[in-house]
Length: 186
Picture 1 (cartoon, rainbow, N blue to C red):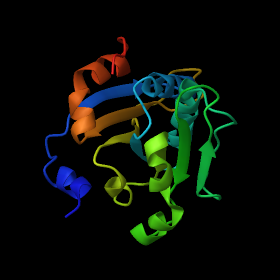
Picture 2 (cartoon, rainbow, N blue to C red):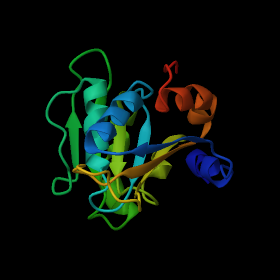
Picture 3 (cartoon, one colour):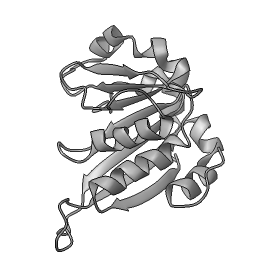
């Protein structure tokens, strides 16, 4: 069993770093910018949610927070995009596994090639990419059943961020503060 598989197998008590209610797309981008302050080269983020939940919008905020080049758009049809850093921070690898059906197809993307030097975010990656790293951040976005506020253009979302593995266990308290509005110190 690989080290990453061992981490997942014994990781039933992974800390839920935060549960955040997101009322609109602007707030989802803001959450992405706050999350970017926690991320570093080598981090893997597995992003899950229904179509239209705001996965790419969250990644846009991460890209803004990391200061990467180029507009962050959905990689559904190209499968993966690399956004180089404009400064000293890590690049962003943004992948979409929606059209992929197996781990073999994930392996063909060679996402692990850039993993050490980039932040890698994979939409629809649940069950496919967790083995790429010994630690990963799992983000699940759900559509909130409550109706939007009067005059709102967006439906509210509920975002749950769970840290898996030693990297996230070590920074859980600090990450929780940063994601719910406090200072980040990771």
